Image (cartoon, rainbow, N blue to C red; front, side, top):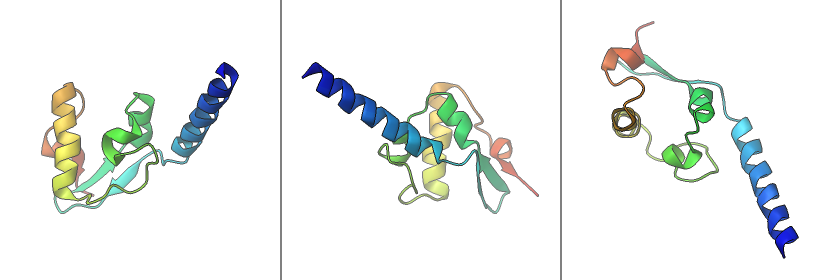
Length: 95
């Protein structure tokens, strides 16, 4: 039974890591006050779990993602963790 559980956890770990490895290094979101470049890989490397933003470990598009959801997820997390940008110009960059 222990070997079965160990094999199951190993397979699950490999599946999650393989799925996360497909994520882009960064994502740029167009916005009127200036585009926002989200350093996706940097967040992964810091241990932010997929579920924190995506709702589950599968990743993919975030349901309902837009200005309000981005500010609720990103800015509020940065304030809570006392890490990362919290001011408009810190994220929004004019081209």
